[in-house]
Amino acid sequence: MAEQQDIHGAGPCQQVDDGITRVFALLGKRWTGLIVAVLMPHPAHFVDLRRAIPGISERMLSDRLTELGAAGLVVREVDEGPPLRVIYRLTEAGAALEPAMLELKNWATAHLPQSWPCAGAARE
Image (cartoon, rainbow, N blue to C red; front, side, top):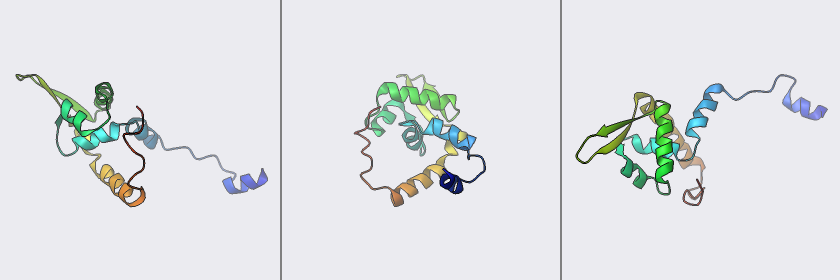
């Protein structure tokens, strides 16, 4: 036990930063980062988001868009048409994630094998 204390130190345990905790509570959910990534270059209709993210169900996409909207990252706009269509776009706060998303993409390219993990194999 004394050996463990020497490695750990006598000080208090380090806590995870509150900001990091909040970011991963939202963006760490399955599909959320992919939705943000698809919306980075331009707004998209619901059906286009669904096509761009293989494996996501309509219900899950709707739930995640609602969460992103509540967090102030995505806004839902209704085009009265005809036909009536809904388009989603990033807010200023959502668009501000672009540098972080690009860094994560670069990190993944450099450090994660191409085949890890298979996105289609995981369950919702």
